[in-house]
Amino acid sequence: MAYNPYFPMNYQQYPQYQTQQNNMVCEWVQGEASAAAMPNPPVGGTGIYMDISKPYVYKKETGLDGKPLPMDKFRLVKEDEQEKPKTDLKEYIKREEIEDIITDKLNDVVRDEVERRLSEFTFKPTNRRSKNTED
Image 1 (spheres, rainbow, N blue to C red):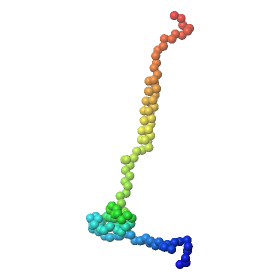
Image 2 (cartoon, helix red, strand yellow; image 1 turned 30 degrees about the vertical axis):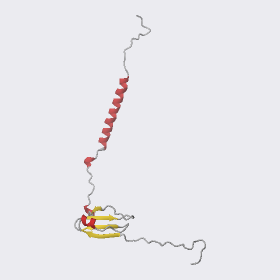
Image 3 (cartoon, one colour; image 1 turned 135 degrees about the vertical axis):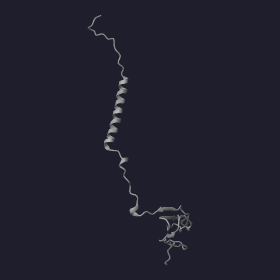
Image 4 (cartoon, helix red, strand yellow; image 1 turned 90 degrees about the horizontal axis):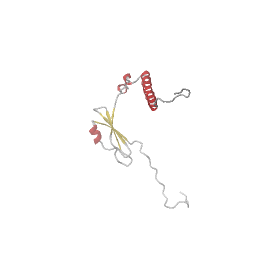
């Protein structure tokens, strides 16, 4: 390497760190207790533990700071056995019913407003005599 006066003599090139591609552990276990007893995966890694006796998969992760994260539990469901959303038409309201409800409510509001305004007026008989009439 040639001498370069712009860099100090004790300059060291930092090593390039290679990230580990395979940070995942995948193993078979028997029950949730077995999955919880498994050692934590390496730093920044994930452990997948598949239950032999039940349709569950457990996931354990270790953060980049080395602390283990809480274990997650997932239930496996076969694609054709998944619960399909049930549409119960009894839960829905028809358009005509909505229009009737709105019309009734609007009529109530209008009637109340008319009654309120009418109550503001008082009709008193007057003792006015017309100019043309004489006593």
